[in-house]
Amino acid sequence: MEPRSREIKATIRARALALGFDAVGFAPASLGSAAREDLREFLRRGYHGDMGWLADRADQRAEPRALWPDALSVVVLGLNYGPEFDPLAARAPMNRGEVSVYARGRDYHDVLKSKLRTLARWIAETWSTDLKLFVDTAPVMEKPIAERAGVGWQGKHTNLVSRGFGSWLFLGEIYLALELEPDTAEDDHCGECRRCLDACPTNAFPAPYQLDARRCISYLTIEHEGTIERALRPLIGNRIYGCDDCLAVCPWNKFATAGREARLRASAAAAPLPLGELARLNDAEFRRRFSGSPIKRIGRDRFLRNVLIAIGNCGDKKLSEVVLPLLADHAPLVRAMAVWALRHLASPQEWREAAAERLPTERDAAVRAEWESAD
Image (cartoon, rainbow, N blue to C red; front, side, top):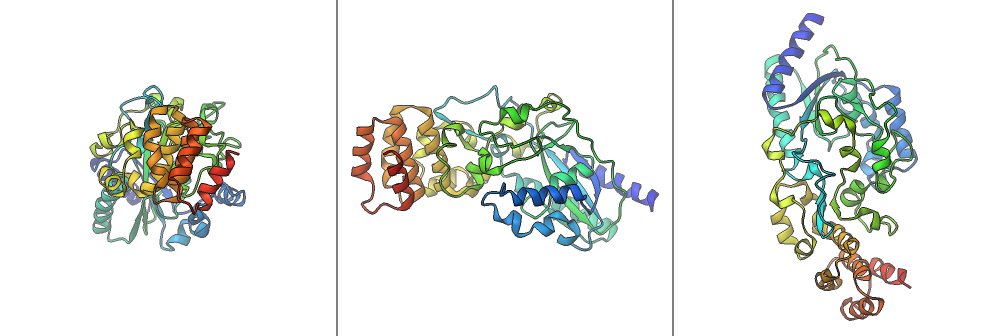
């Protein structure tokens, strides 16, 4: 099997690189006991927060063949999305909203899936094999699989690190009903470094290689649906969608290059934008502005929650005028964060008078909680 396996791998690798993928690796369709135990412990501690899907399909996530019994090998594909700028050096002023690097271009799910489909169709036709392809919406532990495929290793921040691309790789997988010789797994090259752990604004890492998502700004601004814990809000700063701090400080980024895929490059729609402008978006305007962007998937109300927290943190009292109308917004989540933002921009008397005048008489639980917290 070995000579044929090597020939198939070389052919797939060449085709994948020709299609624009930047990294290609091959792994067995199995995970070691360490990865399974890490997942169990992550869930046991509740570090997944309200991302219930992680627990719902944990068995399939922990074992590729539980997801697809015919799987024998996994092709791991990496797509470089390295920025053309240093995310830490190019920080926006506090009155503009910061968007994570990965979300400044077109939704990577669409870009990556289109490339995966092209490659998968070619593999199926060339070797008459069954296969399945996945981006990160499926129950796949893609980072441990990528490590087994030699694409990179999981750093102390739990994200994948590549010797060639630093922190900036999107991952996709093709499960094959072909048994191929796996590549050599990548070693951990973090050494004594802990820059990623120390850089986290919210102290979301209880220990190296452990992430408590409930304190992670990316989780809070993207995955979390409700109000954000008050103690964490000031630490979010002006980040309105995701956070790059633990990725951006990694020393391995010195080997990274800007991504080649044009669709992933930063667009004007997701550049650091004035918070006052974003706060005025209604649902139709939000959808139009972020069409094709991953930002669109959190919806206008959660997005405005993030914007209002950033407004409260920026300290620009002139922004009170855009917060006031949101006290009467249709969404309880927006109204609650408008109360919080206004409290940080106006004097106690001013915000109470404004809120008393504009808030609905029947106050929902979220708004009432914000109001009462000021007492």
